Length: 247
Image (cartoon, rainbow, N blue to C red; front, side, top):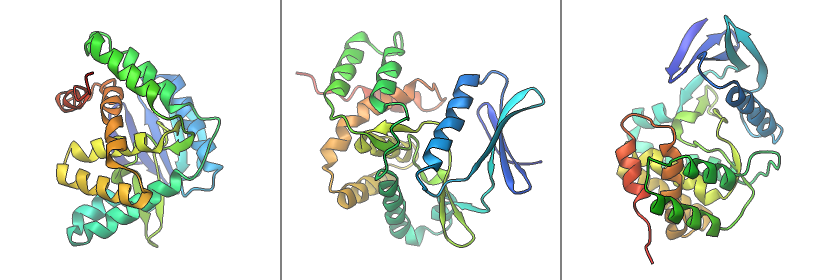
């Protein structure tokens, strides 16, 4: 098998017409099985995602096998062709809005997941800020739209015919579309604030959503992302967590 990419605690290989995601021994089995379950449930919507083939153990490590899609990520295409960035961003947002048209009622609820993550940050952020975040989250409207949880150009593969395929459904939930947009905004902002602002402009225009509504989600989403403890992200995310409206 040929290595496609290496990520934290997982390696993705190509094996003929299949892509095989092999997890480290430390990766929780429950998270692996949940990822496979998420993908199979989303697959039933008919959205353009790789077909799930199997969940197995390879050399003592859990693995998920799915259809391999030949092509480039949208992130690669955007980097290689900056002159058409506006078009690519428009297509990217249109695809995200298409995802959010669907409902997958058996997925975990986004609000429940975020409440658990905020609670787990004891010792990481101040109790007063955690209380404010819980209060803000509880006050946000409850929706049940399909949310990818990490919708960004590196998770979109454009095949050789120009068709998009959405990968990595490990964080999928049902919830508020603006929360998913806030997560996408932060992913962009970690690397390029101007690109993040362009994304937010396009998303809000195409979805007829007020920017302030998405921005209300930013501290909550930043706090939930802090749980991952990714090196280089913590200071940036904490700066967003601290953006709260004190009464």
